[in-house]
Length: 485
Ligand code: NAD
Image (cartoon, rainbow, N blue to C red):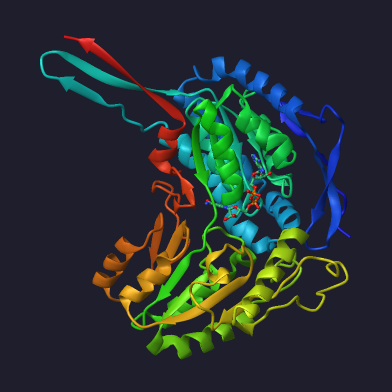
C-alpha cells in the first residue's frame, strides 16, 4: 500500500487552509484503485476568498518591477528542480504515469515554463507608431488583473505551470484550479512558491470539482481572464459562462490527431516515433497521434514492425523505474477506453494488439486501472472510433493511396490540434503540412517543444494560442497612448 499522504488543502493568500465546509474528496491512486490522500472539496466560498486575496495582492504585484518578478519565478524554477524526484514521484502516484516519464518530461518542463517566462519578461519590446506630423502613439501592455487558470489531469504540473508562469510573470494575480483527480503536484508547488518568496495572494489554488470550483471561477465578475485546458465539452461550457461577461478566454481542448507515414519515410524513425506518439502516458496526451495513416506500399511492413515494437512496451507498476506503460488515470477514463474498444469492433475493426487489461502486475496494483496498448485496423475513416477522442492507449491504422486522399482523411474530424508527417521528401512535407488543419504539424518528429512557438488548436480543439509572445499578449491588455505632436 502507498502511504496515505497529507490532505491537499487550498492555498489562499499565502496560507494552506481547509475548505470552509470542511469537506474533502478521496484522492485515488490509479495504480491501486485506492484512496491515498484527500483533496479539498471547495465551492464558491473559497473562490470568493481567493478573489479577495488576489485582488488585494494585485495592487503590489502589478507594480513590482519585471526584474523582481523574474527573480522570484527563477527561484520557483530552481526549487522545482531541487525537488524533482519528490515531485516526479508525487505525479506518478497521482496520475498513474510511469515515474520515468514524470522525471524526464513533466517536472523538468514545469521548471522550464517558469524559467522561460521569468526571462521572457526581461526582453519584451513595446510598439511605437508615428502618425505623420500629427501624433505619435505608443502601446502599454498592462496586466489584466485576476486570471482564472483551469487545467486537466493528464500533465498536471506541466500544464498548470504553463498558465501560472506567464500570468504572474506579467503582473497578474491568479486563481488556479487543478483537476480534482490529480491535485498533488499543484499543492506541492504552492509550498515552493511560498519558499521562493512569492507574495501572498499572487497565486491562489482552489481545489474541488469542475461544477463547484471551475464554474464559479468562469462566472466570477472579478476574474476577467480565463485560460482553460481540458475537454471540448467542458470548453464549450467555459465559453458559455465567459461570453456574457466578455472575458478574455483561451481554450485548449481535445484532439484526434493524424499521424501520416509516407512510404519514403525513414521507417525506423517513423515507427519508433509513432509508438511514442501513440502510447506515451498511456495515450493520455492531447497531442498523441491516435489515427495513423500509412501509404499502402509501406502498410504491411509498418504494421508488422509497429505491432512488434508496441507489444514490447513494458507495462508495470508506475513507480517501477523500468515501467513504460503505467495506469489510466481513473475508472471513468478506463471505462471510456473499454467502450471505444467495443465500439471499434462493432464498427468492423480488428484488434491487432491489446484490447484488454493486462494480467495483474503485482499485489499492490491488483485493482489498478490498467489497459494494454491497443491497435485497431480495418476501420472506415469516418466511423466514430476514428472521429471521437478516446484519450487512452488506443490507435487505429489505416492505409492510403495518395497525398490528396490522406490530407482528406487527416482533416476529416472536428478536431484540429496537432499532426505528424513522416517523409523524406521535403517539398511534400511543406505541401502537406500547409494543408492539414491543425495548430501544430510535426515533420519527422513528435512532441518537440520550443516555448517560443504559438501552441494551440484549430476547429474544436480550441480558441487562442499559448506559448511565448502569444501568452505574454494574452495575459496583458494593450493600451494605446496617442500624443499630439
Ligand atoms: P475536463 O474538461 O473534464 O476537465 C478539465 C478541467 O476543467 C478540470 O480541472 C475540471 O475540474 C474542470 N471543469 C469541469 N467542468 C467545469 C466547468 N463546468 N467549468 C469550469 N471548469 C470545469 O478534462 P479532463 O478530462 O481533465 O482532461 C482531458 C481533456 O483535456 C482531453 O480532452 C484532452 O484532449 C484535453 N487536453 C487538451 C490539451 C491541449 O493543450 N489542447 C492538453 C491536455 C489535455
